[in-house]
Length: 357
Image (cartoon, rainbow, N blue to C red; front, side):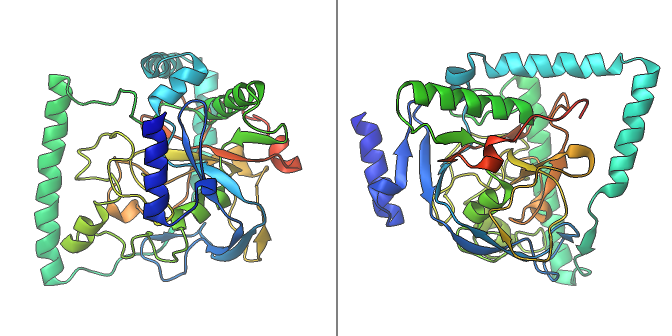
């Protein structure tokens, strides 16, 4: 307990925050207070590798909330859900096999639905210009480095040293529905112990809450400034201090909080594993929004943010949005972090309204 208290006090000094801005709950999950405010959500039309569903618009969040300093770890998952990550991984593999054995009619219907969804996907609106001669040299060098790390990753898998399990690793293989269930159980656990008020609950962050915390007061493609690129070795070296992305991640997840945090103290908010949000995906509006939470949308697909240790530099931007079916059977790199906040009418009424997706 003293160790944990010392860590929190040190953390306060580093970030110039007060002890009231930090919480540690019954499963030793550290939460950082995010104060209400306004920011520009999405990306400007000039941002490299920008997608069409990132319309820049003003968002105001009117309530303070606490957000997990790290992604939910495998130890924390085990304490709340009473199951191991290995069990969940095995379940996903079984579901993947079962899906290949669906009746032909079901397979055809699912294939059509996925094809229709594919037509709705966001398109890239701002591509990179052609590289200069010097940039081509840098690209070749970094691609060779990437190839070497890919070979190392394959070697690790064969030797059984390609680690993804352990108390301090982020929880992965998680469906949106299961992440939501974790939050509900953690809420019940903390309420039973009278550690949180009845009108507060744990839940997934809204997409706006996630981006507000990830940006931490910045408006650049990534919170550290310049977007990393294979054309610019220094940008890769700079960003590798903050995020596990390919190639230096060796295409696998890593224990949480091993790199530097973003300006507000959140670790691994870009890279390592994708993070589920509460919202159903829809294109951003042009108009200003207050406490947005999308509960309806095409295909009822949920949003995940942050991208992963599997992704390369061009995908890693704070505004990058991805969507997925909450019931897809097997995604290695999908996890989540939690928010602790006051219950509102909207957040109270979020339901699991998904079927095959």
